[in-house]
Image 1 (tube, helix red, strand yellow):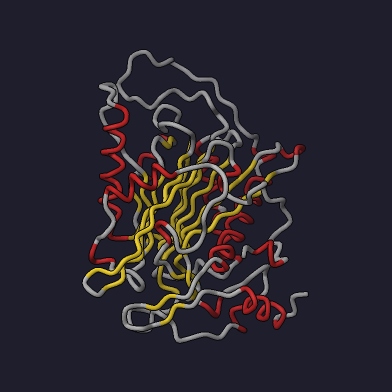
Image 2 (image 1 turned 180 degrees about the vertical axis):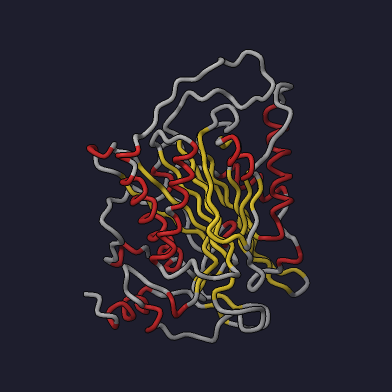
Length: 364
């Protein structure tokens, strides 16, 4: 179940129809999930892709910005986004040791699908979190086939959450983590735009978990930390992709990406040295940006743009914070029980358990 199905309403904003990043028109999400056993070790990993627009992102780029709350993680392609402010590829999310192969597979996919001599380079965005407690991360089982499957299955509409795609082996607040999503649609007087969030949540301590501001983590029991052998409670990371159809410029996308930090903080995360907290925001509101075919001589000298005035941007910031907050809780509620190869249990957070903990805090 998702948070709102349990009567948990986070923030004051209104979700989109699906309460997902795909409420932003044109955005598509695809997963490829690996679950098997190889030489006695569990493989629980995969790839999740977010496509900003239908078709080749290079032909219809969008403005983008990024932010790093804590840098104990990795992501490819962000330096060029910081420099040029353009997202020209799908965004892929996987595990820490598969970043390179996913990046290479995206480059090969671009090469094979475009076949355009004007296109002479590609710098994909690939983000990661660590799944080595529940997955044989050293086996590097993700390959080009998983990237192709995630791209082939990318679609609008409902987004599968929990132990799927890149989130298959993740742990969140010491419960089963993974992929989560949510959205907010602004009122017509605020522009009517949508902000959607997709998270791969692999961070946080159980005792620090908050839901709608209530310290539920203090009332949640459970087995010992799944990190008892490998590290400390809270180790891990969270990566966030924010999408909006508002006409934001690159520096405004960067400001939007920063607000993911607020949603994470509201759920009790964002304070761990061992966490890689990396966020990307893209805006599809400017629809006539020229193709990112570097070196072409037939592109216009200038392009007319639109932008949200700063006096009206705060509603988008609030929407981003709320969407990230709710996406994290949706991750937890989508969790399923798993065990590490050494028998260490990683429980899913069951809806009745969460509701009991909420009531113990004085909620309702």
